[in-house]
Image (cartoon, rainbow over all chains, first blue to last red; front, top):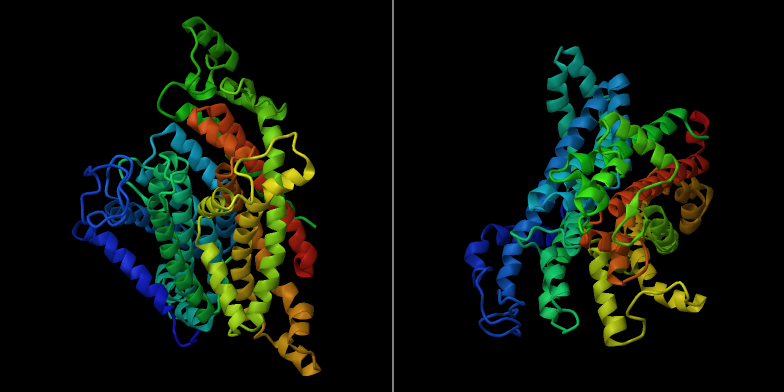
Length: 269
Length: 314
């Protein structure tokens, strides 16, 4: 690996391709994912990946599915990163009692078994993409907060922070314009790993049948394929593509995260 | 050994999570009786009222809350009308199989991940290490249940090497091993991939430090420096990771169990979910919480065992 590169080139290309696909799903998809054709078709010219049990075109489902999957993954990671940054910055910068309270809270949140909790909530409520995204995001900020805190503790002792204090800048200004930019090397890869974890979790929950039936995600497609006999009938074109989409996207984003981490020499635990 | 502050946080955490578990069924929209008994439970109006009294739903919330704690301390987690069994009994039967899958996987994954990760961190541009990194990244990116599906399809369905379905209490030891092989393989690989990436990154940073230069100046060669000096320092983040990851790995194991139809907590949760058997779901949630907290506790002790700086401070 060439050390001059900040981001892994292949990872970047794959990730961007997936995002573009999700954005332009309506234009790329050959059919409407809800339109019904003859069910259980093998891959053929008009349906490159065949059709499923109710006759939806699998390729179109796959392309549209990227939306739900990416929304959950990226949305959850944005929420988690926001709270992680907030808690980590405040507790690292102010130390003392603020730190005690926030880190106590973080330790407690760390102990919540997240996926079982989501299973319970989704069992009681009607599951939706937004519920899964929100709950994942609200539960997954803890490790970001820890990483940000320990980095803030280092940065706040640096000379330029001391000089900013001497010049009389307010705390808010110091945190946002002096400390925050120096936190980014740890936040960026952490964000990417959070996207990965959130997407794996979403796929697993959908596999349990807790996915959002009104918004097909890749995980939900696997769930349908398995429960409607795709595996035993050896219809690999049904359940493999969504699985590999998850793997490829997560792989691209994780390799971006790790190459960034390696370049910047930070550890993300 | 173990700081009082940390212990206090663990207890407070347990208290809050258990309280959450009390609130959830009562705060959700719908009928609390069905939330506490499970949805496929059908009974006459009179017996529902009787059960309501038994569950204490006619009492004020505070009284219900106190009763809830009393039940927890006496290990009464309610009754599953779906399985026709006490929830505690159900879970204690299933839990040992989940642990039998999870604990060996975490151990194998930890050893494999840290060793390979350390070697790869030492010489990261070596072709072999690059390949291993690539492979572990691929495993890292794969949802465990999907890896399970692929393995099940190839090894059991297509080639018939391993059994298709779970195992039963009556199986002999080699038989159980045969059933466990694929699930443990998958979970070990998944655990190892996470440990590998952290250990690798950690060694990459540690090997630039001065004590390593000193060891080199003394005349030690690469691997000796790695295992005598770097390894201990670099493995600290991995221990933190294993504790942080325990819940995630446990959930992964639950999904793998479902794929392989194994007789553990994963399938229990799945069955309870399909029949909306809330007492079982909540019981599982409580037990899993206790397991996660215990894992954190063990990791903290282990941490202070390896790092004398932590030990002296506490």
